[in-house]
Length: 395
Image (cartoon, rainbow, N blue to C red):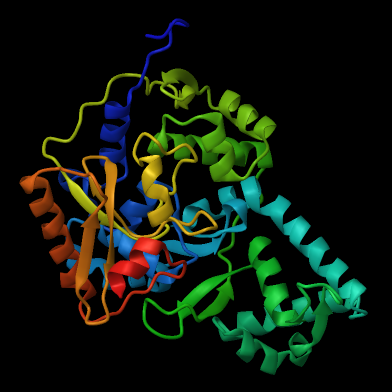
């Protein structure tokens, strides 16, 4: 207990919780992509390959990764890839669509639409009424097609090809196409989602699809529900962690914490929070564990304050300049190195300087590398956001 009577949750227990709730320890691995996404709340979907790699690291039978993830995303519709927290693309259970949209999407969407209209007006492009006509026409075309690329939609609605100059006279000046900007706004508004890619599961070219129908929820209630789910998976977490992950104002975070009756605990960083009834001790996994997690993995990116699982000295080699994490190697709840795939398909990894984890640990990491290689096969993986160690290892 700390001086305030709150239970202290130390680093070791936080790593135990991470191993079990993030589906990383061997016995905690999931049976399906739906279980993985449900446990983690959301998978980063900006890099298409990262979704499959994050699922594969957590499936009991990794050989099913590609087929089962494709089924859940594009056949059963159990998972959806759409804009969410911090205007980032995520993959999450389709049943969470209404919660994500009401808790985070509306505010972002209003800002993005206003920005688009402002940019178009400054460039002398058509006005809001014109944009509404184009939008309605494009959505009708998408409904008819079911799924379509931006180019296919532009054949149905030629006004999507309209271009305008952005930031004229500035260093950031560029020519924008209405289709590109408008579809991103519609994604933030929860009207369209990312559909099946044009190529393999690693392709960054994708189709658009109508968003799943969902009720309009009260924003405060939706924020409380999203925060409850995330704290269940990732708690304990600080206010800074919660503010960073959701993209909300601190007042919204505090209101949601109160709404769900979150309990305060003591952490090495200060005050943290867990869902009601989750203050008790959590025993660790029965066996030690290793994992190779992809770039933008939700575990590596899950908290803003990461010293309890990621030594500060490792950040320059494992993150790009924008704060995107690259592929990481884990041993018993902490990052110990990184990995990459070479041009010939070999999965290679390296421990950080000074890491002496023992022969058994290195053997376990090697087994995970072989496990990853067995289902990735001949597919080549290049992270969208490349980091220093990944570039070095893949050379």
